[in-house]
Amino acid sequence: MKRKTNPAQVPAPQLELPLGQQATQEAVRNLSYYIGLGKVFATYHKRWPTVESTREEFRAARVHDYDGQRIDRELRFPAPSLEADPAYRALLEHCLADGMTDGVNLASLDPRYRTVLDEDDIAALFDTIVLARAGDPDAVRYATGVPAHRPGELTLHIGDTIGAQALGLAGLDPDDPRVLAAGVAVRVQATGALKDFIDRAGARGPAAHEHLADDYLLEAGDGGRLFLKFRLRADRRYAGGFAVDRLTRKLASVYRADPVLAGLCATALPDLPPAPTLPAAPAPHSDEELREQLAALEPEGRSLNLPIQQLSRFADIRRALEQAGAVFSAHRQRFDFEEGVEPARVVERLLSGAAR
Image (cartoon, rainbow, N blue to C red; front, top):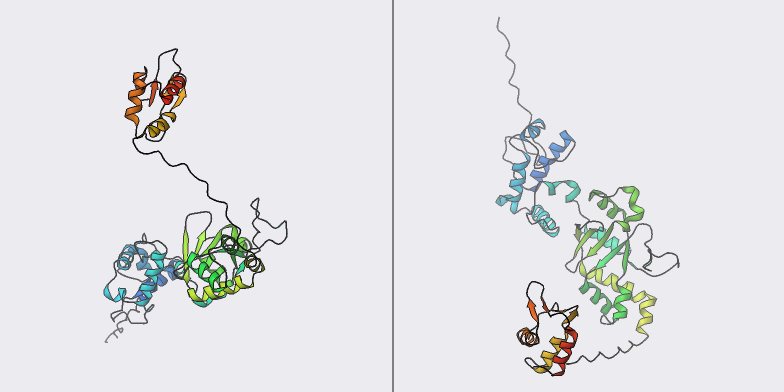
């Protein structure tokens, strides 16, 4: 009696995600490929892989021949197909904007890091721009007198060039210091997209959204990049790109409609007080220069201490004081006199020209 043979079992493809290709086919190793590796790992282990993730952990997730170090290395030193991928180049720009000089790495593939605001989300955020103006006398921030932030409101720092162009477009004088002071305090109301981005940035949870200004501010640079900055640590997170001309036009419309700025335009810039006239420096190697530097010596007990600044006429001063009985101490940087000699009187005589 012949025994029936079982048909050979074909193993399931190890990695249909990210490319939808069978394991027998050669996968194109673009950015989606490496993101897919991370997704498969995260589905099994419930966390994103790190450089320390071992080959055994990847094998348990049915991803063979990989560990965290290999993925990190292939991302930082990309093959031509990966380097040519537009998505990889966009993420590389993102990483470099955040100050990551090594460029794309395994940590930067984490969805919490990769996600940024798209241009429409940033435009919607800029549509909420207002200027900080005093309202309720009690609604000020601490003892500074600056108006307090409303719930969900954040400070927006505008690039100098964008601000100046917006003022000019609004018919205001960007060189008027009063106009600059009145137009610099710009704020936005956090949108849902921004709150979601802040949560993904790994900081405060949704319960803190009412007091975002305590921990964050936004920075719109002249190059068209928006950053989320942390107030309590020296760090920032790239939030996306925006159209500079669109922000400039929006800001100009806010400036144009502001009554405070309109009032400043109606009044002339007050004349500045004349600059104080400073005495001319004495001519080098002149007697006046010698007397000025000699007068800079500070009497203390039986000594004359040298000033902090270097004296160009030190050799002449030392010669004159040693002729008057002083001994120079290089360690203490001073001239010492014998008991009974008043250093201030010695300097007086030298200044008056009684001893040379």
